[in-house]
Length: 204
Image (cartoon, rainbow, N blue to C red; front, side, top):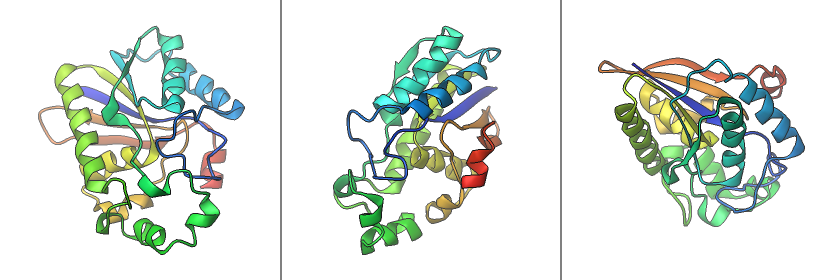
């Protein structure tokens, strides 16, 4: 049986300020580096077979912290990248809240394509494809996937049978871990949004 660990990257200075999406150069903040180091410490006793990461800097830095603890190298996989926010990339959140299309997207994910970007079903298809390919490569292994909130939600919603438009009811905190068990039977979600920092739950 495979264990797939779905890990969201740690904090950046754009969190809560603007929609970074696939912007290059968005790195972990000081707080994020501390979160990544705490997260990495949790993996000391975890027998990882592979660490896979989105190609964006914030995910790579989070994955590299885990690699530094475990000695397992990081494999970059483009399919784990953030959702393509298209025309909204770089917008301040205060401006997005006044945009009617953004409000529609937030309330009904499955009902529209992001202007100039992805549809949530495309995110689901590529993310589930990554998970299932890695499960085939490591049928009895432990796989760490470092990605982003919406792609992780898409995976969990898929295996939980949650419609895409309801996936935002699941919170995926910074530097959190969610765990899937994969074998020949139905996949099982063992935990969602695990973090030892209780402030995440107080701020959600």
